[in-house]
Amino acid sequence: MSKELMERELFYKVVGLASIIHRELGQGLPEHIYKSALIQELKENNLRFELDKKVDVIYKKTTIDTLKLNLIINNSLIVSIISNEDLKKQAKTTMLSVLRLINKHTGLLLDYSHDTIYYKRVVYKNRKAKEMQSAF
Image 1: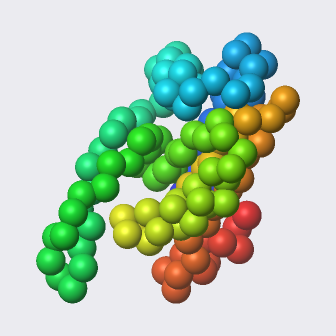
Image 2 (image 1 turned 30 degrees about the vertical axis):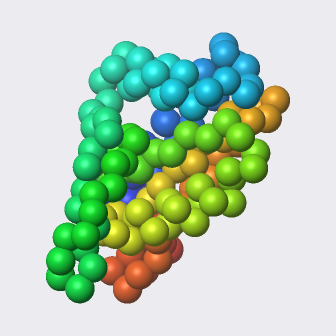
């Protein structure tokens, strides 16, 4: 199976799990509650993940700070959970910056602030990722 197909399947698997969580818990709870529920679902579905991974922020070849990533699934999908409508635009911009900084291509924003789960696939487009983009 190609890497692109595996990443697409992972994306939709996580969206499905997020939908299950939304049906059970509803909307508007604090983000950490949805994150805990998603972690439980990932464990039950035998998906590998990393929590609160710290990555260096490099500026002019010097580490200037660290950034904490909430959730990385299968070392490829960066997930951010929001439950406040006002944060949606900022979350997308932040996700794009994070993807660029850590040289990953796909992020998933899960928005629990509505009566149904909203999700957004965020893709960092660069020369290396161009070929992958055409697969979706």
